[in-house]
Length: 150
Image: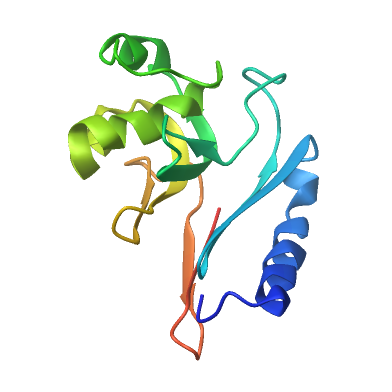
């Protein structure tokens, strides 16, 4: 977003709540400077600890996901040196990015849309499955901000 004011945070939360009917089990928000990641969760896999946003070990990579990663167990085995905080299928995304860079998206089998924030260089990556099963909407504010939703 164009600023990191309390008013902007309130607006992000307001917009996120519009999706609560799609994910009534958990609401989460992460703010880093003028970046915001908000999530409304429908808990299917690991309902006890899979709350989002999700992070890598040092919390420098943050991700919020809509969907399901079918091959998450296989992908976890490719990263034995990583410590996963949850049993969520989506927990692999931040770690895969850290290990393989943005090309990791081709490794994912599933239906998904996500936004990943790399706080090390203030970059972000938005992606969805190749078929586009889950929606991914993008818009730009008059102030130059980027808004993404799924």
